[in-house]
Image 1 (cartoon, helix red, strand yellow):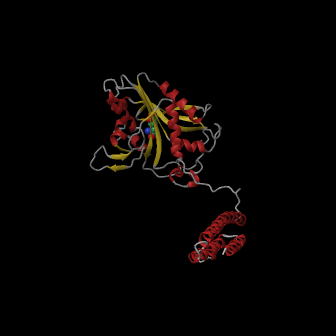
Image 2 (cartoon, protein in one colour):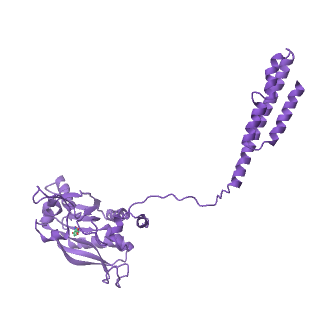
Image 3 (cartoon, protein in one colour):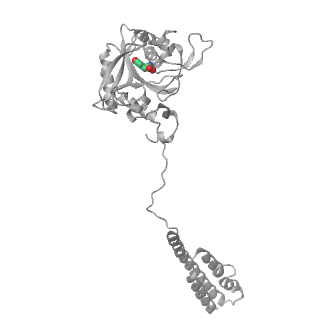
Length: 352
Ligand code: DAH
């Protein structure tokens, strides 16, 4: 019986040497360690042996079983490594190939520019104040010194939401961020009506105009309004603030000029041009050969507007401006058509 066990072990180990893939390994296990293997037959025959033989043969059979199991385990490791090596070779995995790019989202160019503007203004001490997009005629026009039939209303064609029963005060989409000036002044004045605190704010947000969509005009666009109100604020403060902003935004060497203009809510009013950075002032298509690009409207807050906001114009004065981030981007990046901004064409958006 001892000899038979030695034979079984020898034959099994010899067969294991030939095994070189996982399927053959499993077949070997069934043949040599499975329920109907020769070794298991020895175990099941133990009962027929004599009392003296049984423990001796039992121990020997166990030793063979342990030996075969450990041989199987180490062969299994070798087979696995060989299979990996083979697949690496056959699959020709080129570990030097670049990985697949993940498409990472980004902020919309308008949002990026809006944030640039606001972070510059924050450095200059302007706090962000947000105001509603749906307004009343009263706030969008009347408090800003546009009387009901004022011709300057035609400068801003309006989306009316509810015109019918509200008489002279229909609900509308704001056509500019300027009504936020009144909301902000009233907000701050309410904290101390007798002696309202000074204000230095930036009002960002979407504006809407009922206009023909063309390369130069869209029905929606962002504006950033600035407002400073306090005692002894003069036009010199306005000029200094705007000049500082322009240099921070367009570069230390940027040249600018103030041009007299008209807005109902400011007096005096001006528009600001920067020297065309496309042609350096020599004249080109972007600046229509003028050498200058208009970037904002501004002025000293009209006394009627201060009054509407709860600030006594005999005590307080202030300045304001309004500018468009999309327009700034168009100038900065030579974007020829404003419709790209809301066209959702990734080829455009990806460039920012
Ligand atoms: N609200 C004007 C517009 O939308 C822009 C503007 C001009 C705002 C002068 C101002 C300002 O605050 O002082 O065209």
